[in-house]
Image: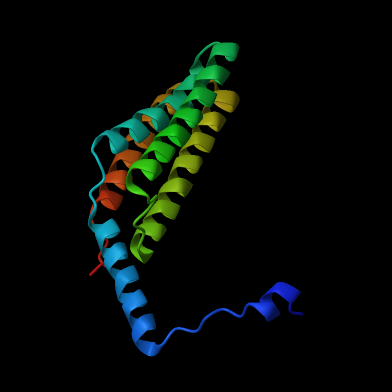
Length: 153
């Protein structure tokens, strides 16, 4: 069902040349964004904040909850600053998306294993291992995603 406004003002149609020029411009902007390197502060910040989340469990309860929420908020702020600075969040090609999904599953799985070790067996060392692997995995992931996309021209 068309609205009255759309029937009165139809969208202008582009010629083939104009459409091709617009596509070339989009591809050029996309290639520029893919070639923009990620600053080194970003992987380090994400790694430190992701390591703080599992370690916050070992702190006394009100403090631990505050540290955990602060680390999550810190990751969100870092992502927002990065987005504002470069205008992009990810240069993800298909490989990067798969790697990011597997890294997320690894991190959640390690935190779940650490929780089981702590609650069921009273072994708090699992949180330290989870924090270390979180930090290394997030640093490696952001360094991997820092490289220009393989699909960019």
